[in-house]
Length: 423
Ligand code: IMP
Image 1 (cartoon, rainbow, N blue to C red):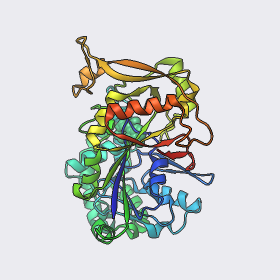
Image 2: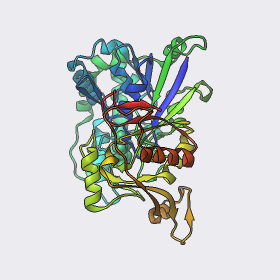
Image 3: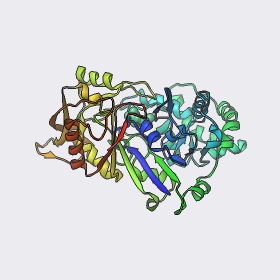
Image 4: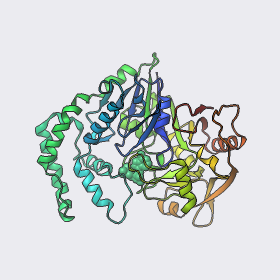
């Protein structure tokens, strides 16, 4: 039995979809632990392109089972749409392979309504507008609605009425008309018919798959990236769940001693969507060029991503937060279109000193300026092998390994599975 954590080390969009799909080739069970449809994981397989939001990426392999764990917040309307879309793309036996925790929480239409109002106000985070933050707030205030309620129509109505009492004054204040309790109740009962058969507990599955003397493989798939973690990310410009290894453990209820491997996925440069500090951001036309070459548009929102150079200070912080020992570098081909490649190796702090530590004080972070080392760029041949890695790319890899203490184990240079090299 092996349990592997695979997660993103930057601000999301590191290419987790492709890499989790790749790492899941022989996986028996793939689990999403936290977040919801704010994620957009793209997988290309035999010229078919799948974009998954709630569902774990390993599901594309016909033998893999998928579990949506209790740490998630789930929009049942959009989840059903996602399942139907994937079914139409020809993925077989899907509903027999998916299970959802009855303890994961519902994202209600009002959560999305609330977020839309907030995001139009000063101090907007630049969220994905999927209702993630408000749903986690409801959960933390103990007013949230676990998916199990879809089995109990009367109790569901009571809970909806109770939570709506909290939201109503806000909607009135902003003069926004929203669906009534009866309407939302009816909508939920409609989807409950298809969601309830998918509900199931994780413990019996784990009991079946986590046995010390068998060959089962389980992957815990992270969403977003370490720098968007609610406790350790660039607060308040973060998501509302924990995106680091600890968050994956807490979101699934799997204990730390059950984990065999943790793999961190990083892009050869950095991107971010939404607002918030980004020390190595490239402003203007050069940043746009990187975005264009890298196809940096959100898989969930279509928003152009902000682009910048690789930030080793932030990366080392993420490696420490997540405990990953193996790294996957994705999109190495994008930088081959640049004459020179820059890498940030330290921050110049507002007091004039420099540091190789990512500051926890958000107001210091905002004022940090990157100190760069410049490298020549490299060529990626169509058939990259361990024997023909361009020396410039090897120098880039060596620097990442030396700085972070983690080992670069995979390179990726395109969305297709064959554009991956184990090094
Ligand atoms: P939320 O998760 O929708 O609340 O958004 C909070 C912040 O996280 C925003 O800056 C989003 O752009 C960012 N974010 C959330 N999910 C993703 C993701 O999957 N990839 C990249 N950024 C994300």
